[in-house]
Image (cartoon, rainbow, N blue to C red):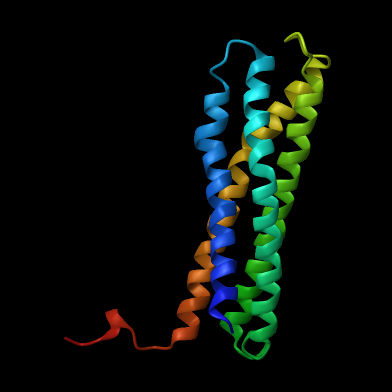
Length: 170
């Protein structure tokens, strides 16, 4: 397997994880500082609009490189039970991360539409519903993509064999 494909897989997951974590820890709290709801939505929306294409490209490349890695390792995935379990878990978590990312995008769009131009919500119920969903969705994606990084480390450990730095007798 090409080092560049593995590196692409890891770097794109890191971008997906890091961008979503920054959103939850940095951008979204900073967006609450302006005085009006409309300004708050604009700050958050602008940040996510700028990050969106980068995140979309990272997700697409992550999925494509993951397919390539799985295809290349198909015999190990099929014939080694621990690898099979980890690969299936990773596929399920990846699907959940894609779903949480897409749901956050949809609810962010709904929040933007529900907010009025004058700072008064056009649809207060829709705005509040979107805010509630986003309050937990913002943490779902970094949790899921972080778990993917852990599973990548596990797959690497499964591949390297028994002897390692910590296994040596001094």
